[in-house]
Length: 277
Image 1 (tube, rainbow, N blue to C red):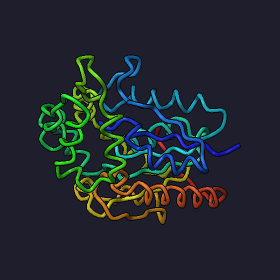
Image 2 (image 1 turned 60 degrees about the vertical axis):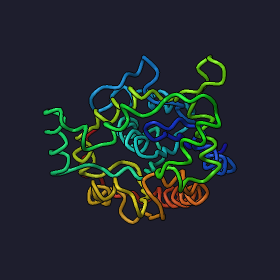
Image 3 (image 1 turned 180 degrees about the vertical axis):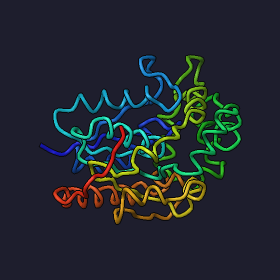
Image 4 (image 1 turned 90 degrees about the horizontal axis):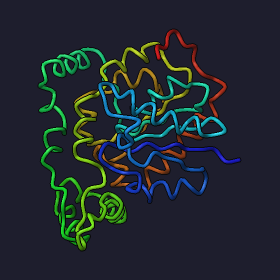
């Protein structure tokens, strides 16, 4: 039986966006995923994402054997949070540009959320007014291809996002975003601020991390708290926070390497001093 990767996507990017990267990994692993976090009414978006964690836990519990949790951005955070709830169901966690917010930065975010001024410090503000209607697929392609954020994307990935990140409205050839802007906005506004405390004493499973060299999120949050739980299992890849879209094949190879490293070192886990789930 092949190992299972349970992959979790970044906020706003349905799982189809990662087709090229996951397709390569599918040669070695069985791939499972939640298609769109936050869109199932059984798992609503609330402060610190307990519903989203439960949505991922449902997928974990549906697998007959322990899984490798791999997640990008939002997906990396959810993977770590779910693993803390079900450590016996997880072989290891691999976070793709999901730096752990801890210390004074977590306290600052908590205060900003309490004062309702956190919107300006995240992509939330831009999300509210993002365009979400186009007359046809060609218009969707032209719109995103012209944007600086997307001009470094692998063209196959961009085509997948255009096709799988939008859906028909039922009016002729018109398309709209598949990932609700309102849900994406709420996810940004409800970031957990206690993750640093939860992993301060280590984790009962191996954790790896891949950081983008040009990631704005890495610059904002830093890697101090992340380094404490990943140790030597940290790799860098040239690219922004969205490097899985920019370099899907290189990202897939790093995922394969790090899973193999975690698998090889499974019998040499460090002693856990404290782990609050």
